[in-house]
Image (cartoon, rainbow, N blue to C red):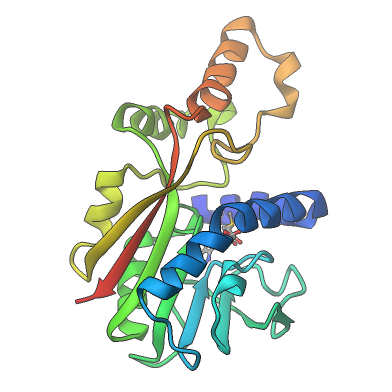
Length: 244
Ligand SMILES: C[S@@+](CC[C@H](N)C(=O)[O-])C[C@H]1O[C@@H](n2cnc3c(N)ncnc32)[C@H](O)[C@@H]1O
């Protein structure tokens, strides 16, 4: 018996094993975040000796662009991706989930989590854990794709329709629901739109068996996977947060 999260992770693993996807993601992260993180590091004066946790780091490890010496990446697929206990771009990768971070309370100065919270099993638990492992007033950079409410609702409904399901994303956030998720544990310091517009993974992959579908199904797939990921409907959004 597998649950929703395990199904998502199976699809995620298949994706990461396709090197082209990994290269593409890395280029995207570089394009969108390199300069942004450099500017952010100046705004919040990141200390060289800070301890940083990269939650759901994947093989891309966005924290590679942060100028700090002690970096840990936590990734549930670390073993299966042959990354476990390896050093990738100066980041020590551990296997584990954000819902159970294998570190003591108040260990990290900064946690960064990009494009992973909507992939998790229980985002609320991950937020609590992030707060637990952060030092008092520690920083949390949380970035994820967000959708306007009607689209988010449509995405939630598509969960019930196998051929429309966005398998890799068990959760869908709006800006409002993202802020609600963090409000008990974090203070919002700044918010940024990182990027708007097309990204092939915003909505998951177009079902490869699309040619076997009826015209109605094909239309629904087209709308769900192509139209709704245009710039009017999806934003990559980043919250700069401070532990309460
Ligand atoms: C789309 S990838 C993003 C990887 C990287 N952060 C980036 O921006 O390129 C999402 C990652 O979240 C990981 N993930 C899924 N569930 C998780 C959980 N419960 N805790 C931590 N990471 C998780 C997945 O295994 C996957 O590698």
